Image 1 (tube, chains in turn red, cyan):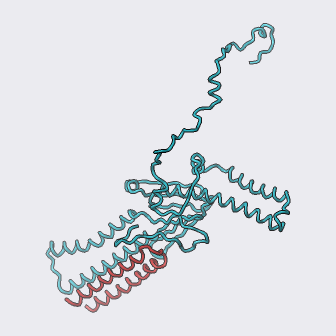
Image 2 (image 1 turned 90 degrees about the vertical axis):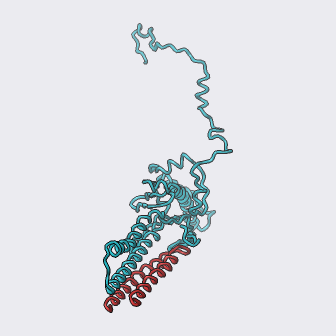
Image 3 (image 1 turned 135 degrees about the vertical axis):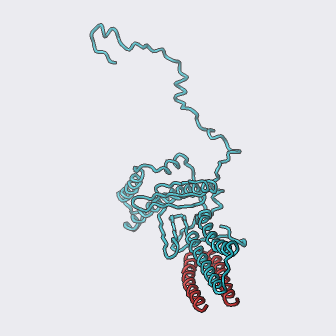
Amino acid sequence: MVYLILAYIIFLIIFGIISTAAFYHCWEFGYIGDATKFAMVIYSIIALAIVVVTFFLILAF
Amino acid sequence: MALPFGQKDKTPKTFPGQEKGEKIYLFLRRHPLSFLGFLLMTIFMILAPFIVYYATTQIGGIEASDLARKIIIVIASAYTLFVLGFFLVGWIDYYLDVVIITNRRLIDINQDRLFARNIAEANLVDVEDVNAEVKGILNTLFHFGTVHVQTAGTLLNFEFKFIPNPYKVAKMIADLHEEAVEEEEKREAREIGETIVEKTGDSNDVSQEEITSAAKKLSERKRQKKTRPMTRQEIRHKEEDKPHDYKEYGESDLEDKYPQKEKREGKPPRNEGRPTADPSRRAKADEPEVQKDNDTFNHDDLEKGGEIDL
């Protein structure tokens, strides 16, 4: 169980690094008024929701 | 491109690397349908684990233990996050591919996933030929295709893929090229004049020789440009011979400026005021026919033995 959570956290770190790189591209190469900021916000909300639900399902049940 | 919740994708007025006095005439992204294949693939990737889970647990009747269930949840979560990240990278690849047409340059920005970006630009003066290509069912129905831009000499040739309204974009580039060439010629003439004034210090003291040599240089440059074979766009525009009135364009303005069907309601017929036939030929046709002798020989000359002019 501990190893499972540890593996999941390592995956989340790698996922976070790649997401940060993607956010950097959106921030740096996007234009004023385009959809890059909107995409970053939606992506963050969905990813956070998935992580929270996963931890809830693992730890609560 | 329309975004959810009523947001609108605004065409930017500035971009990195913009020169002083440079205006954006067209800011284009790839057509949304070019992203459709990737979107469908991503949806399938998200649904696949749910289908497998349903098949194994509900249909196959496999029951997992508590630990196994948690492992499945973690794997499913990791897989979903992976697909989400994959989708974001693919969307960045699509959304950051931009074509910018200004009053001076063509700029093609091509984003290839992460950490790979290619920016190609060419001056409008160097454009030699522009072609628009629409191939395929979806391309024809939804009006998007490829615009090929050939530039002078060993410079890059551009290929703008998945461009909406490619015919109009190609025509716009051709028209802007003409304007850029005219501006360039005016600038050269101005520079020659300024050079002469600098050398002499006073425009009134310019000698006739200097003016003549400067004029010769300019005419030589023009002649060199004219002696090269005309490109297809030059032939096309010479036939049309219409003045172009340009303003800043957005995507929605293309439809107004370049209507697909020219409306001729209320306009005079095309041939009005133009002679339909050559007047000199008509005059000759009015002249009475002269009966000509088909016999070209002068028999008297034959009898005399002289030379005959045929």
